[in-house]
Length: 54
Image (cartoon, rainbow, N blue to C red; front, side):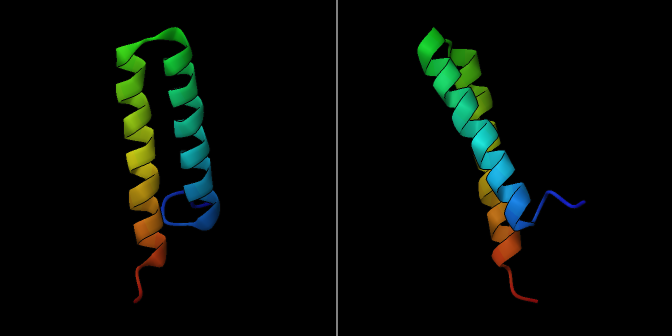
């Protein structure tokens, strides 16, 4: 199953990023915020790969 560049993979990365961001805000942890930004960035690039026309 391919996660990067697929619709389900993009949704998975975004959900992980949002969940990590919520956890970071709840715990007031800056390192976790940086990790959440990384997950969300991965979701954006995965979405761009999914939308890329061949």
